[in-house]
Image 1 (tube, one colour):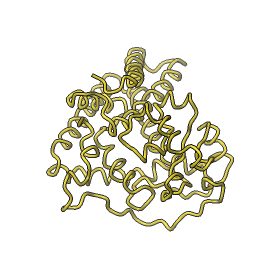
Image 2 (cartoon, rainbow, N blue to C red):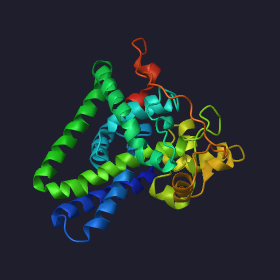
Image 3 (cartoon, rainbow, N blue to C red):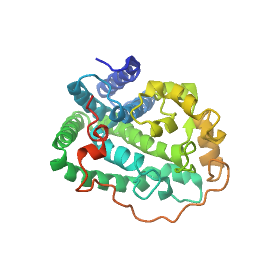
Length: 314
């Protein structure tokens, strides 16, 4: 049923997430053990967010109906409808990286202390993402009803489950359900800052920052190999390391191949200044309002690309 057997790894971590969630609601919010449990839930929820990103570019299962069900499962792990990842990420960020049509461009945070930029990036871009998602959903209700129905299904099931868990135990809901979801959403959006801030969006090779450490990439399904993902979005995550080496070896600036994300984050956001990838101080361009990236009336679904509109298609 799987298109790539490597997806057994994220499926395993999905199972771990649900086991931990059930355990949390069985025990309730008591004593010290709640702390490591919620930390593990944050990690596995973030892994669900990463796999959400992967699944909207490269469907996991061979059957369309299985991919639709899987998107519902990911919605419950990620805490947000998976289909809504398509407009802000695929159609805005990928097609218009770091321009005013990119609702997730890193220039939206402009604090002098760089640590504040990484802390508050999610809140800086969140309103634009939600507004664009809402506008896109309205447009797609008639232009692409299959996508619209899937998005509504995901949202409806998410709401029903949330209300049920809230009634069962509101304390457990806040700690074991809501907090990990907020962390996952903050984390996956904030990754954009680490992967693109200070890079050259117009460069053939230096447009993205890559984190090539083996432990991080094993846990996050090669999410650290971001440059090759922008060059070839449908590429399955398991093929990213080899493809990265083939395309970028000897061509990418060394500063864009970071061995350790924690070390980079410490030196960049805690101790360091906001620099370009070549260690030159970053000069931010003049910031202005978002420009619309929504499909124009004359564009057909084929013009936009089927993979960006229906990630359940095989």
